[in-house]
Length: 245
Ligand SMILES: [Mg+2]
Image (cartoon, rainbow, N blue to C red; front, side, top):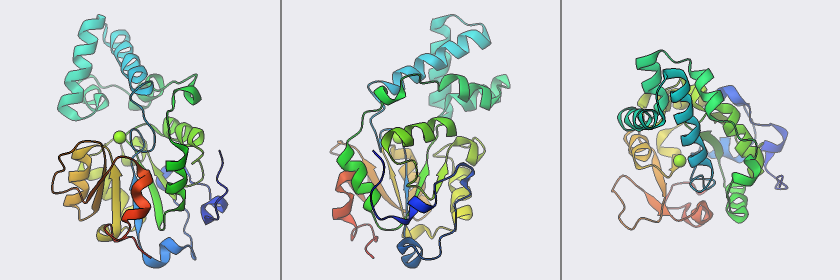
């Protein structure tokens, strides 16, 4: 499922490290618009297979490395997740956990291709959107790139920001967003954040971005510019999002 579109990103594969190649003549550079896409539950559905696998892996990691039984490990994982927005942050703060060790061992997917659930037509519309495209995920880089490869989007993004590239400061913390804005020289009012998480969108809105909430929820907060059931709807909303060329 590789891109057969005309996008110039084919010549410039996305790299990790946030070191996006500079493109002199892409349409995105001309009109200054940029998209920031979340990965899980935005570009594919992680709920049926991937999230349960990660949760099991994290609980097992806590059991093994903090010498907890399954119940205590599960409770601690949830506590850190609620308090810090990421289990990792609680582990780093309270247990001195090595983030790379944790992220590697909790994101192993021997059968990733069978676990990713995605709509091919939706991914095709993402490829064809005008403007620069960045990925910003709270997941580790090895996992983000593996999922993008499965989705056939391995060369689409002009920059891939996984948790390592924002110094383990996940969304919705401001530090990661500001790093991305500075490194990519984004103009917030010409930038659209696409995410399934409301706290992430609120943070993007506060920085001046427009926001797309990927959700089926009927009630939409005022910091959401548009809600979509799927990214497939984005081409119809370019005017609302200030992304018409
Ligand atoms: Mg998400």
